[in-house]
Length: 358
Image (cartoon, rainbow, N blue to C red; front, side, top):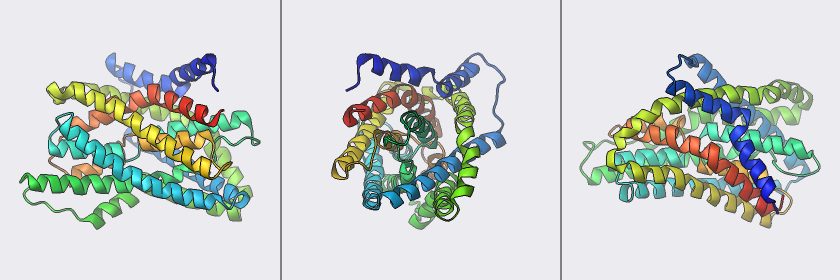
């Protein structure tokens, strides 16, 4: 059981780790009107590096774990099915809550729901960094984080986007909005699977698995680059996220009188989805003892509780053009993401460690 002092340490580390401080620097830079800016090409490069590093490490660790524990295959399959359920359930629930409780228009509610159901690659990257550091701290003798959990990214992301778009279009058609616009599920699925974030992560996972199985020495050399630079690149990536969040704060005025309830949804709902994810992985841990660590549950919480601003915005602009980006983007970037990494993630970590008795 965690002591009060240990809980305080976790909260302070969450607030004052270099990645979080770089994120704060980005927000402050906007507020003081600094000309600090991350070039667009560099922004894309940072995101690509993080996704490739997460994928390569996840694929490599999955092969190592499966060779050692063949029963892990059943865990991965069940976790993938659970991810699909979570993606659809989160989108469906969030859309209805935003419509009925927060008072958003139908198009805005379902466009935002797609963002909350889809996966935040930035939140995932921070979660992987924390879980990997925890695993390094205890050594290889104790399982904290198996490394393969990011492989579940596409199993939640694509179903969440597709369900939010289809339900949103049906709801708009019932209201006579959209001029009978039709959505091609195959096109949505293609964009969901082959969009940059999902495709690069999945491809990197496959590369990591093949390289680890057939050429482990070369894989080790490759990970010297991706592994050693990961946290430094994450700092610069979060600096850019802080700049983006700072710029989006002013757009929140578009919410008008609905802003109070929208704040509540943006802060509270992702925490509930993260807890749902933790409990699901904990149930798997009880069913298959010794194959999942608290870090695995924590990383899954970042997948379930995140709010996408990479894959979701493009999908929603194309499929629900009636929605106002000045509503769903600020909610994702300026509200949920900062709250998650500053408050939510430390709390998820505490919950995971309490459940695992770590």
